[in-house]
Image (cartoon, rainbow over all chains, first blue to last red; front, side, top):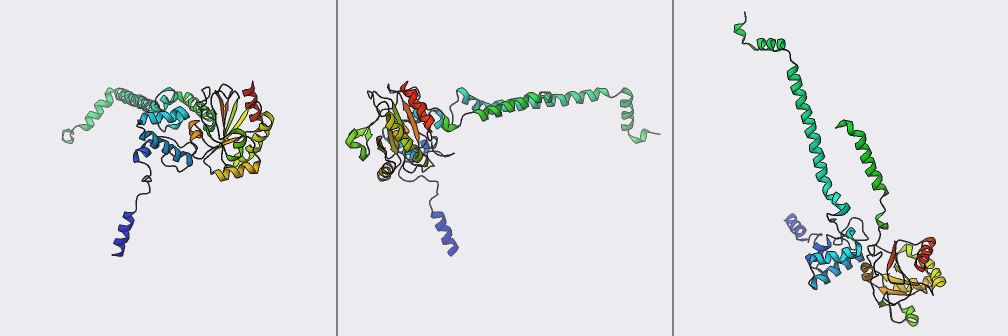
Length: 149
Length: 174
């Protein structure tokens, strides 16, 4: 019974990842796409650094003013450049970041194709290498036993 | 495919070398360089009000180059930078405006810091650091070099050395 009570209590705890109740979840959704400038590998949604808190406040204010997500993102890009975005836009040098998996797959496919073509060519070569005499002997070996003297 | 391996090794080596040569993200240029500095006006910290009035900021018609220094009392590099800025303020006060912006700080702590280092160049108070975000700051200390036309010439992230500060002042007075 005590175990059940403990389990119920544990389940009743709020998940630690839910946003604090001061801003709407949409604020955190937008902040998740933006870097926290003073942190290492943390978004503006996760960090509790003063600057990240202020960024969330700015997002909340701009949402209240009726600005769109793209406009809010642009506000930060104008001040920090594309660096502030977790997903770099697909243009310029960052285009390579998006294309590199495709290039990698293409290279892998090309390598595989070359390898398989080589294997096939070698198989054909060995097949044509077998002499007439050898084929005849092989066929004789494969004849049913009763025909043999 | 295998006979191309020296080229592949060279390509990978080149990529590695290029990656190592890329500048530190802390040295990334500000997107503001070459653009007009965002104007603002913020309340001055108490010790400067008698001389400069209730508010101060970057705006058109200042007629002076500005070194905008973003600082906080809890920031360790700011402690070595503050006396240096003060010395240059004494030397160039008629030609360059060194303007401090105290961010992410409590006013009482900021005042203690000013008193401790005897800072006479004016500092405004921006508790939430909103002007910092307006300028796209990464942390403290950070300095923006603004010419007399109000155009941002450079951004310096981190502590300024004496040579760097002298370099920026010479650049801005040219």
